[in-house]
Length: 382
Image 1: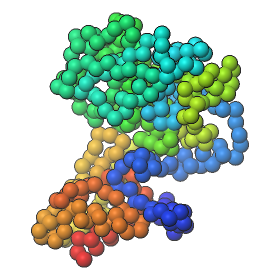
Image 2 (image 1 turned 30 degrees about the horizontal axis):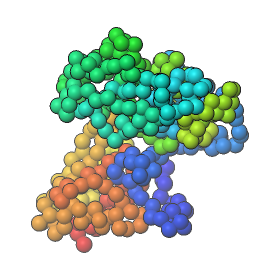
Image 3 (image 1 turned 180 degrees about the vertical axis):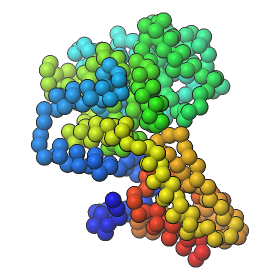
Image 4 (image 1 turned 45 degrees about the horizontal axis):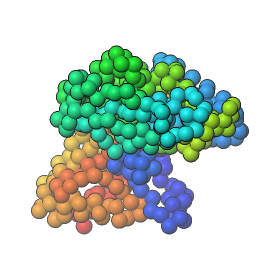
């Protein structure tokens, strides 16, 4: 299905904005993701009626848990929100009074152990609800002994981010080792697995690999503003007590997550997207990306000093296209080519450097590959 109608372009132009053909990837700054036809239809259907939101949150979590064979799950407004909910739930538990005091964690265990080499932009999610990071190891790695030495009377949990794409890092404490440490000391392990949606075997494994595991919906075709956490039922229940509907039902705790609202349409869309992602033919999906790459390759194949290569990726992205060339022969650098494509309407955004252009294929809509091919050829030759 094509997404390049003039009406769709005018939606942004009427607001004074330039629509973007996204050849970079699932960037939040570009809107994150595009729902599939099936997901959009489900969201449209959900829009026709209102629903009891606490019940929807409960049954959607049950459906996700069943799909991934875990104890429980809870929908959130993205993966970062899932981590915040998880951290808040671990610290305050299900106690109404303690929930209402966050981010004041006086009297609560509020320290989260994090390996220095795993420090990243989103470890702040543990701090937002009142937690403190306790760093183990250094930039070269962390040993089991160093992680255990970081445990103290105020330790609430072990934080972990899986940034691997199929390659383990022997210099770090693994998820399995962290779980063993946590089990010995009675500490849960919280894993950020935001984009670990593929291969499907990896998704299913990591969903059950720790006490709480957090995912971002945009990496499997759900709305960018969705995500979920899953794992131990008691910890998921504590996290759900921090949810946006908790403050409006039951004993109405002053939930930390009240500002992290998710629409009923988004919740339905996320569940349907996960169901679809777990059942579609991913080989066929990737073949579709390769077909898009060939359109671009065919258009520029006769240009001097230029070569292109498709790389298969062991992740949700499936495949990418790299174009290398000699700026001296072409008469333009890769950065100049990028600027030319980005300056038009709709704008085309792609990665690259002086001698390289890089195209993510999984965020291209049908037909956009031809537009990229035409404009790339013009930019190289004009």
